[in-house]
Length: 339
Image 1: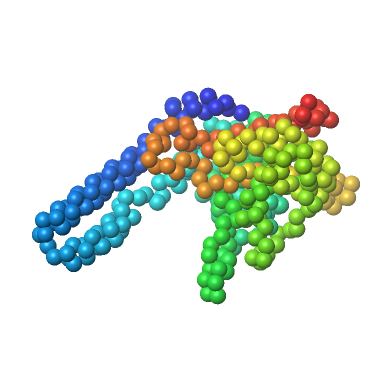
Image 2: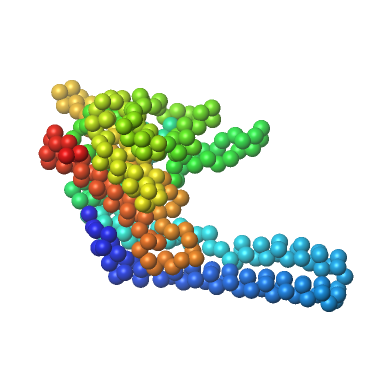
């Protein structure tokens, strides 16, 4: 996996030159906003002078002061914003970063992960009414074969007798790895706030993907238990799999990056015509929930690593977890991660 220093060098030499056009759009918005602010201040001063010198009837001044904010609000929305700027920035960052981070990638910018793959993650109880994705990529992350894409999906829920409201189920980056060894269980690690807000919507659930397995207690790790819920069909195996270093790594990622990550280990049974060839394999899913993987603050330059490194940090986290699991279960079977 490329180091943070290597990624910063990539940004300076390769990525930032590609973002110059977007940076110019960002600066243009800033200049327009400053111009609007100056005009508003001038008009406020003008109205104050008119009132003090009694140049116009009070009622006309009041009407003018009421109309001006609406007019400038309309103008600001039309010319002082660029609704596609952050989305375009994310597209460019992901597109250029993929070739740097992923070995021999198969990349399709306009396609997303198949819904069937997404649904098998066991992370989402609610089935979406609308599902779309971008930046479908398949390639090697170190020694690990991964498939990933950005995903945006949700459904409409009733908020009144005749009112519908859009509810996001998931928006962010999903990464899937076909692990080289069957881990022999199904387990989900889910952020508590997302579990409450998105995954367990209670009476509002209209369609079910599956039912949760048994909740696994991690009472000895209060910090983790307050932030995450773990479900598994084999609780003891899950407790051995989700070790203290893994739990701490998840917490550190959330605290340092500010992006929620949900992880699932899914056992998939593959049946052949010859039953002797039947086998099972494990797939590991990472779901990074974020409205954007780049900075949404257009008041700051895009041409700095902190503005564009969200995607890199997610991929780096996936690499770290998969490499540690390979070390435990493939290179050195039976070795506990905590040692």
